[in-house]
Amino acid sequence: MGIINRGTIPVICVSAKTDQGVTRMMDIIKGSCPAPDEMPGVETLSGKTLHCKTSEVPTAYIFKTSVEQHIGELSIMKVYGGEITEAMDMVNNKTNVKERLTSLLCIAGKNREKVEKAIAGDIVATIKLKGTQSSHTLVKSGDEMIVPTQYPEPKFRTAVRAKNNSEDEKLGAILNELRKTDLTFLSEQSKELKQVIISGQGEQHLNIVKWIIEKQNKVEIEYYAPKIPYRETITKSAEAMYRHKKQSGGAGQFGEVHMMIEPYYEGMPNQTKYPIRGTDSYDLPWGGKLIFNNCIVGGAIDARFLPAILKGINERIEEGPLTGSYARDIVINIYDGKMHPVDSNELAFKLAGRQAFREAFKNAGPKILEPIYDVEVFVPSDRMGDVMTDLQGRRGVVMGMESEGEFQKIRAKIPLAEMNKYSTTLSSITSGRASYGMKFAEYQQVPMDVQNEIIKKYEEENKDDE
Image 1 (cartoon, rainbow, N blue to C red):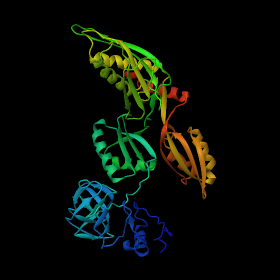
Image 2: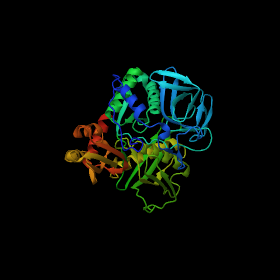
Image 3: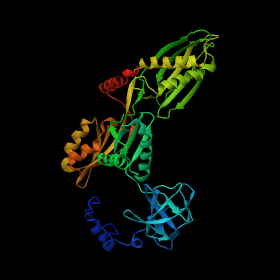
Image 4: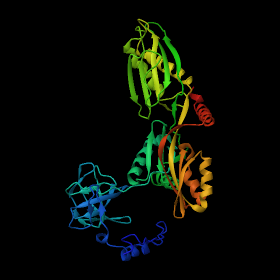
């Protein structure tokens, strides 16, 4: 049959909102589509093919999770093997969690009918699963797992906040529920950007999310431009010193730090004009390296104060001097300093190290790095020129083009900052006939004119904090 081997793919127009075409669609599914046991088997992670038969080991695949007001979390699953029954114990082979099917429900619109069992091919739901999510497999015995559904990567991102600050916590809980029920939707509380970032398949997708939050959960929200996770680095060496001195009756604070900073690059020799007595190398959580060299001679600074200096530097690296972005790929050489026999302490040297690094960074040819994404655009041949023009206007660098039937595939590298609302623009240019995908590639230096604009914008946004 054409549908079984996918030689024929029915396209049926329906509207759930107005209930148009739904009955006809159900009739076509019932009369023309193959029964579950006529379909090809599904692949498991071990390479086995699992056929939808009652003779197989009881196996169920969770393909959707929803949250309902009076029921809680509802796990909807298709039975791929054997027979499952109410109160049956099964195992989630991904998490090794034992789950009990406290009840089985047959779903028909808003109705939930309790059933005692379900056999291979049936679609049912259960509640109160402890550690099972969408794309997980439950089995009665054995270690098979059905190959999880591959969901498309998000293409559209925005920042979101509650209009009423008192509802921020409630909004966070709603977003967590949406992530469980829609695996093409992502949300993140970004410590780096200090924003809640949500991502979906397009502007329309996130408009639906907004409708769900406001109409069903009664929380008014607003979307606004997401910040870009820039990075900061240096391009030349620079030296600086800073003396922290504070006297206010009794013991004071005193610490003086001299440092030289240099750019780090992979494979560089760890040598400087100052003798190195000790080295610590750190892989930064946000990418890149920090090399910390102790070049102190003659006991100018006690070794016990070096961790405090490093702590001060780390605080400054997490909030770069140019735009408040994370800094990376820097070699720190602490080569001199001064102490006071009474007033020197860890706090004084932490503050001195922090400020010395800030001054050195500003004089070391600082540069802003921006995230670059590999983008693939599938576009009808007759709209190729318009799409290419738009990509070039986004500072895109075209890496290649390939013909795929009546479509062209364009491969390009484009800054994330230029991809805001691209899905909407692409749809407008091509009348909805094009598609695209993107994934992170690397960080690159921004052009100087763009860097100046970024710094100016950052300073304007933070002038009240100075």
